[in-house]
Amino acid sequence: MTELHVLRVFCGPDGSGGNLLGVVLDGAAVAGEPARLALTAELGFSETVFVDDPEGGTLDIYTPGLRMSFAGHPLVGTAWLLRTTHAAPGVLRPPAGDVRCRWDGEFDWIAAPAAWAAGRGTGRYGTVAEVDALPAPPPGTGWLYAWAWADEQAGRVRARAFPRRGGAIVEDEATGAAAIVLTAELGRPLDIRQGVGSRILTRPLPGGLVEVGGRTELVEVRRV
Image 1: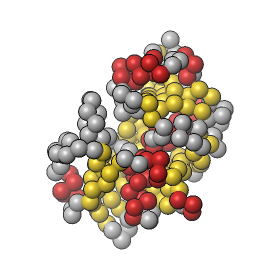
Image 2 (image 1 turned 135 degrees about the horizontal axis):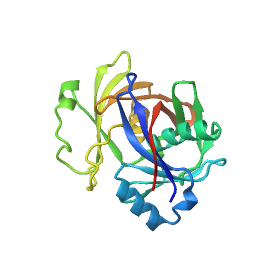
Image 3 (image 1 turned 120 degrees about the horizontal axis):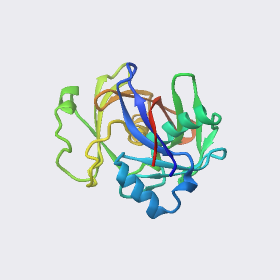
Image 4 (image 1 turned 60 degrees about the horizontal axis):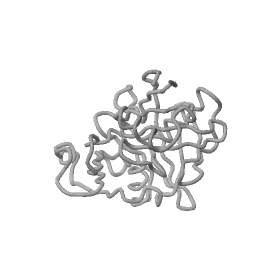
């Protein structure tokens, strides 16, 4: 048995929204890919993180069906959790490589290359209403980040995320990696409202990096 922290990542300013995330801080308690996949599938969150070295920031990320080298909302949420339970991490180390972290008192931020989020396609729609009216998932294959300008001058975006890879996760409430891809494509800071109430902030950085940040809240701590 070990502790599982359940978080909501990318919460809106009123506390709404946020994508659920499971984090096992004692990664050694769930050793090996088969055991981690089994627990992730049992929990049913879009991603679950296993922290193998809290001080060094080494961790594993899983969806219910596969191990991931990089993902946005798991890293933002884990950065917040390590900051509140251990110390503010300067770097997290998922399989993809080192990810810089920072926090400003309200938002936790990570910075990563958009190439690490490859495979998440974006689709622009003419209006917010068109994005809101999409079925879940829309017809087609492959990852779709559907978006429209809510206010182009201000950089405000309405978005919804559809993995379209089978399984139980039909729509992601908040998706940092897809937000990174969109920011890299548009080349400007964005203020994204995703799902039913989530908020994601992004900005491009020098060297091909994109920074993504948001609020995280603790839902519960349970034994698994």
